[in-house]
Length: 456
Image (tube, rainbow, N blue to C red):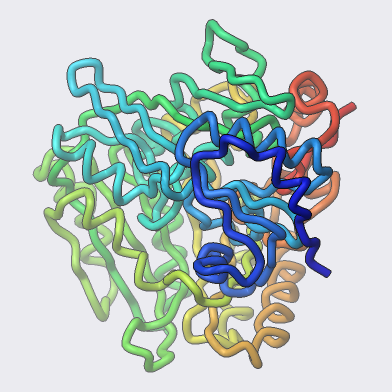
């Protein structure tokens, strides 16, 4: 049952400048809804912050009132970490400030910003930082969980480009985390999720990207999927740092339910080099669709948006493959052949280049080996089909588990990926150091709506 906040408790929020949304109050239902329609939680109170002082007030209130805290930035967490049942949702979605310094090639970003908004501002100057492959993803959650994206072979993860952060800790302090200030906290924030506090602003290193790049999509019929994915395995193995590709199996966007094999590519090199590098992909087999060519980076970064709209029902599983073997490919195709939803995909995300040259212990993200991340992204719209789709996803993950390396990307967790086993799969050998940082900055585990690392 959702808790009710007493008036005397609300007195603890005296001076809060933002909006406080209470159960059944105006705007409450819209504010509590998040990206994943499968998440249906009712916080006791939603605190819509106007700035860092409001974040401090909200954290202090939740701590003294004994309420669970969830933190909503972009609200894109598939696991629903941004929501809480009966607790306090600290809503940062209205904090949209973006301040680009084109000379220093940096950007200061508030936590309510999504990647399409940040890209719009940075691309004005021909600059960018690695962002989500779905442009509606929030900057905050993606960065704190690592942040894979189209630019990672060239420039690393989003979190590899985080220069500093302003953080509100569990005891209400406001700290700067960087290489020179609170470096242990800075290390933990880069991949350790929301375990240590609420980030009120991010400072990123930017890189020269676009505005025009080369990219697009190639699609093949499903009966050619095995041959195409074997080709892709060899093609991807020879990729330069300029080339990022996702491949896999999905459905035609026309609603027909037709199954396809596909590859999406982003090339940051010269048009001439991109044409040479992408020619084998363009010319292989008998594709149903080839749309590869010059396009704005902002367009490339939104190509997958239509397949992952806000409000649909989502249940995902993922893991890094030990190798992209014939047996693994056969297993993927066998499971996808009986997929119940015409919106679901199984994707292979290629880790190579700059992202793999960062030492494992340089950040909290341990995923630094050349490999492919297998992402089973189940999406559907009918609530009556929920049990069937979740069951298929779990069965598919179990069937493919023999091919996995035991490492998992934390931003693809679902709401049942909890406990120490899941956290250790996400953080690997960095887990014990994260426990130390957690113990130093959140010894009471106030921030636990995440892939939680309990304090020691």
